[in-house]
Length: 322
Image (cartoon, rainbow, N blue to C red; front, top):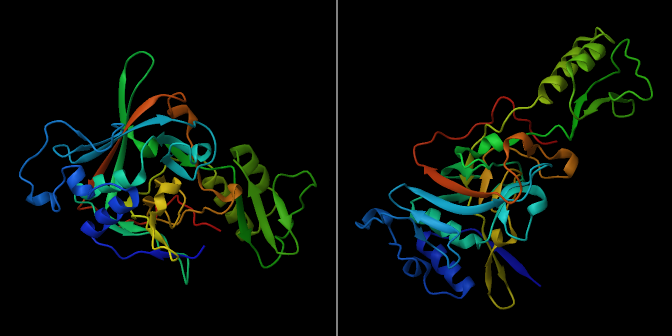
């Protein structure tokens, strides 16, 4: 089957294309949304459901989109923060019973502008679009309500390899066969997997006085210490693919790539910085289990567009993908 990826579309064209793809009437009319929200004088006092299941609600007065989600994972490496139900729950903290186009439409109704997904060729170009803040609301077993940024539920992954390149083997370095720190003589690489403790760091530092080696060990130690996500999500907007045989269009994010923490060209929301999606051992983020409520907990996820946000820059602790 021959397919073509399409990226160029405006606000009304997008709504019309989504409506056609879903077999509904014009999406803006269906949901009672004006083509330009700034020209709509009426504002709802209560959030308006945008789908029949009521899992996506437009809060015009609060200038936010509300998603009724559930916790589906508390431990493990991540590609998503929130996915569509029955798609990628094995690598996403939250899931939602909704179609992706409904959520995209809700963000458009708030005035958020989709930019462009990540590009890897001819060189890396980060996702672009309106910055979107995420907040999680839930109630614990004692009935106490909570609200906190989604970033607090995500930490850097230690379940991955960290590599430093050398011209020659560091002077004096002799590693035992069972050492967790490895030296690759052929490629002149020093590599480490997982978390490094202070005790391990100090023991490795004592093995050589080579300045580059010592800097590498310190770097491994810092990069493997837990820290929460500090980089922003942006409204990348995913895209359509078109079946060249019959012209049928489908929205790429319906595959599950709703709110990503690993860069995907099909992502609706993505991190605006390099974040590897190549292989489990290179994924950069994992669920911070101690901060996440039990699996099955209902979480109201707020999507709040930030129209005056500065362009995203990688956090100092973020690692570029290998």
